[in-house]
Length: 297
Image (cartoon, rainbow, N blue to C red; front, side, top):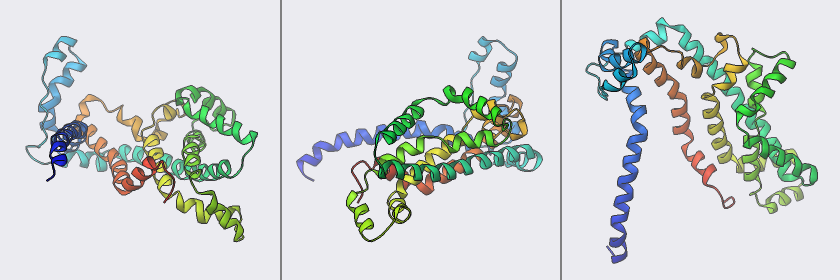
């Protein structure tokens, strides 16, 4: 080992230890949720019952004085909570599939429209294009709460209030994907586009056979970000959907009362599965799409 490597070894060890500590803190809630979902209702009540009782009935002094018994390993593994969620309480599954019905179309159609819009912004120039793109940036910078009232008014005017379309349409037309894909498509070498035009390729062929394959990493990364964002949406369905049967699971989780703590752990675990699977499957694409800053290889 060279002297230079020996000098850098302590710093690497320190960085590794700090990264490990932060990883433990970030993963602890997820691990705690999964392991607690495998506990019986009796064990969960023994670990958390007192503190939840104090929240419901006692004062703040009693709440502060109680201690929570955080257990990562159940005394006995039990699938009682999953049995109750999946078989005895079909409303949980109904809300889960509501989330899927909302998020999957929003993600797919938002990517489709964003890819077409990004190609147009990339290929054509002019003052109108600059104004439109600047408008997209302004809309993207606005938090959703700012546009919630206009969305409500437009949905009411279109007579789609309290229907799935009131959530679908604003999500599909979101400017977030357009901005990111436009920035990525601008990195495609102009020589590649010109070579395709010389070979007789039209705009549609250039878009389908050149731009989309080169932007595959960006499409995956944007798709993951959009999926996670709308999977956790709360404000949109609360304001736009008066019928609770149309609400996604993200809203229903907040309505589980403290007497159903075990069910809350089980539902939360089921709720995390799509996000975790999507992240594990598209991790490489996500890193590639976010970290790619210096053109395409």
